[in-house]
Image (tube, one colour):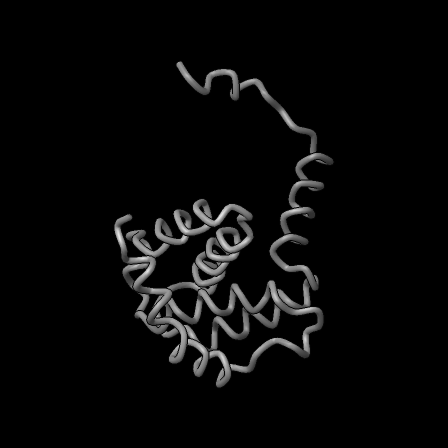
Length: 139
């Protein structure tokens, strides 16, 4: 009967809003403008026939994994993402682009530092293959 205690654990609207705001700040350190720019990049670059919401969701899964401080946890989460059934509609290039859009968004201090579509494509072509091989390994 695990989980039954969760039936009666309630959070106030304020707590939920606070958690949501904290998550948003963690995922988009530069705020709503960063989210908008990254959504535009996802629309421009990802060729998979999925919704914009799904593309954003996949990118956020990668970003959450990249935020893990523990290397083993980070790699385990990325492997889980890479092998997920939902990701099967994405090409290898799409997967690489999702990864690098997620990564770049964490490594900038201003919106001007975001890589362009062409720069992201180049980075993916150059650096995705070794990362992909790491994610494919069973151990």
